[in-house]
Length: 69
Image (tube, rainbow, N blue to C red; front, top):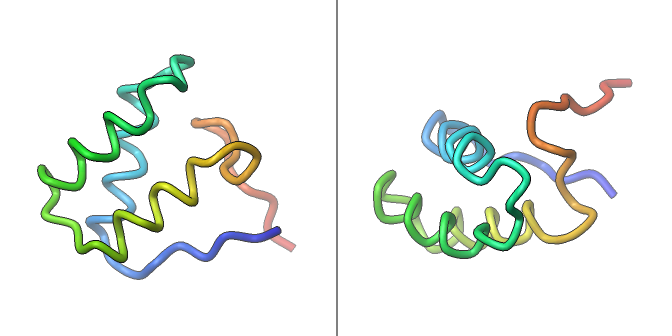
């Protein structure tokens, strides 16, 4: 299943920030999403996107790019 990234630099920065902060500690993801949502002034829709994006088996491991066909 492909996840479409919403437009805008803030959401991309938020994804990168979460990846950088959580490392391999995936148990912190919810906490980090809530924090980044406030820090980056994300909308509820953007925040919900992050929860879906970082749910199990949705996002590639941080630092890996998706294959582009």
